[in-house]
Amino acid sequence: MSVEIHPTAIIEEGAILGNNIKIGPYCLIGSDVKIGDDCKLLSHVVINGHTTIGNNNEFHQFCSIGVPPQDKSYKDEPTRTIIGDNNLFRENCTVHRATTKENHETIIGNNGYFMTGVHFAHDCKVGDNVTLANGTMCAGHVKIGDYVQMGGACGVTPFCSVGRGAFIGAASAIDKDVPQFCAALGNRIKIKGVNIIGMRRRGYSKDEISEVVEFYRMMDASALSPRAFANHPENMDEYKNNKIIDEIADFIRESEVGLAPFMS
Image (cartoon, rainbow, N blue to C red; front, side, top):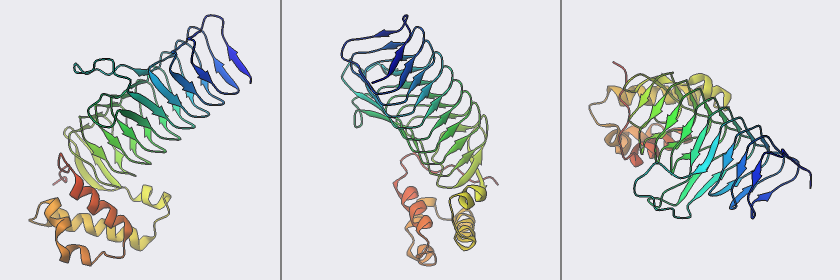
């Protein structure tokens, strides 16, 4: 096992470190932390709590991972923080451990790119290949799907969900759910259209993309609420062979806070 630890770093007894890890100056690793292979902690990184980190993750200076949640009900329960593989956390990123209010886990997926000052609060669930720009903040119980991209200084309020492939403009305040492959922006957030470029990158055909665009246009024009529209058999029969529309419809039906409105 090859582990390079700066003499000023503190590794508490019980911590488990993988192979080829580099831990820089003034880092602090708690006793219940497990770090996988090929990870780098540049300097002044704090990782504590019951935290499991996968392989090939890089944490820049002053990141704070697995620390207690900012929730007054939390009583130091042994909740967890789980981070996957190949993530980059730039300066001052924070990931808080979960509360006991959901499933006791804050989860970050794989291949994430989190720029300076990104914050994940307790009980967040973040998918794979997510890119969040500087200063973006996710409150408690937020869910972020795969391949989501957000511009800088976005804020997501508690219990909101952003569907996979969505593109969120900078400085947006997200207080409603944003479905899959939507492009949305604003304070408060509104849906502008479909993230067509994102769908192309994910390999969807021209016909599938055209049907998704039509589905959202029809829903916007309908007198029905989004949930009622998605539950109406006649609306869904036309797209019964389009799996992404099935996924979008399920997202709408399961939304607890309601969908972001469309721009007029």
